Length: 158
Image 1 (tube, rainbow, N blue to C red):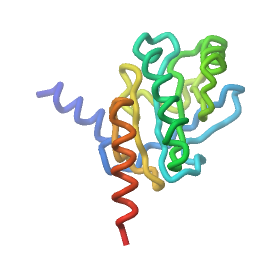
Image 2: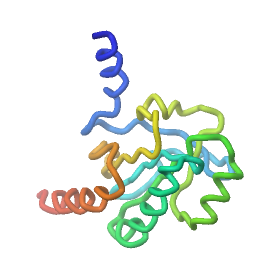
Image 3: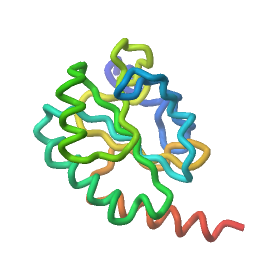
């Protein structure tokens, strides 16, 4: 029972419909970057690591989806690097031409692992313009369809 209660406490801040916790991060050159400063109708937050085998497959697929359709639909991507090897991360971003908002937390200021329940990679969250969580822990394969359904739903609202 204790494990269940502890797990519930860990995921409570990032339940669907809740406002996503603000993250104060750094861009690739250590300039401050807050998740609240991103101005777009929809925000994909992806937590990843350039050394992660699964990320090496999924991140290029996310980039293809972004360039093919998400960007034109008003979706921005905030990619958060989990580990601290700046050169390795920057080289991967440059090699794969990832034209997203690329951020990290080299000083462990944001506590993103706890706020977003990050214990594996990659992890994808989808936020609306009010930065409420509308999808989380979804696969790249699902993301395009989810975005289309959310946009369709939002366009039907009076």
